[in-house]
Image (cartoon, rainbow, N blue to C red; front, side):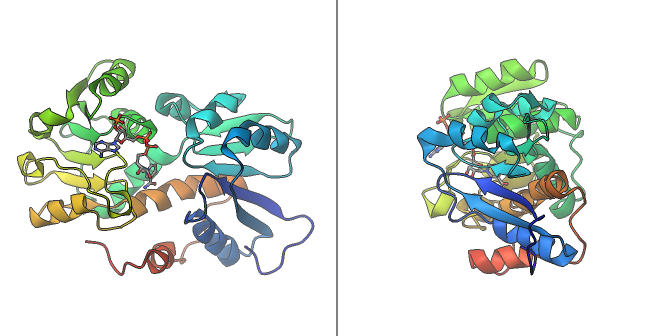
Length: 288
Ligand code: NDP
């Protein structure tokens, strides 16, 4: 939030249920303050059954745009008048922009955030060099699969507890995609360039995923979308094997950059260490 807000301030926010623990207000308001914008970024937690009323009520133009988090991402796409190819490919939206004519535009910046996280934390990773394995078959997995396919991955392998959901994603992806049940994760890991946990297992320190990461090549980059805790059991297992890793916080910050641009019309200002701010809030001091 800027130090002083005028009557002309631009308002954006994040909507979810729950939204209390979202790091997005911290990140966006740090950028707003550093850029000296007349703007604010606020959390919204409408009743789940009233999400459509909430979004449609904003068609009047009171709010410039919203980031969307669980459990509203699919519904957000369905409510929009127009959507980017990225959002259609993911089957979900994490960004809504309210146009001046009352229309709602949906986008999905999670895939951009994922690729930005790899570029930052595993700069030698080449998405075109080897198959990419994605664990999970929800909206996050679907978006990741589309992003890596667009980035030129020679093959995308989807591994999921419920095989039919993995098969549905592969069908939508078309060629260069193969589905695996969780029990056959080792087969999917053979020759992989990257393995990405896009399941919600590991969230808040639950049991996590039990997959044979040792079956990955030594050079495979291991990434976990979960960032609470930052050092998930999955990333700890990767570190024990000496695999390079990418964490979910880098992805969260990566998806926030194009969202900020969509809301406020400019890139986030340089020189703000939003990762350090987020880590302080998460209670972690450094990445693996
Ligand atoms: P969904 O609820 O749509 O999908 C969850 C997936 O996890 C399903 O494939 C489900 O399998 C699988 N799963 C859940 N629990 C287990 C388990 N114990 N063992 C094996 N598989 C399991 O979630 P999303 O796709 O929206 O999000 C997935 C994760 O990614 C979440 O933790 C979310 O917070 C994170 N995320 C992080 C982002 C970031 O910026 N870092 C951005 C977007 C998401 P099944 O189909 O069998 O039920």
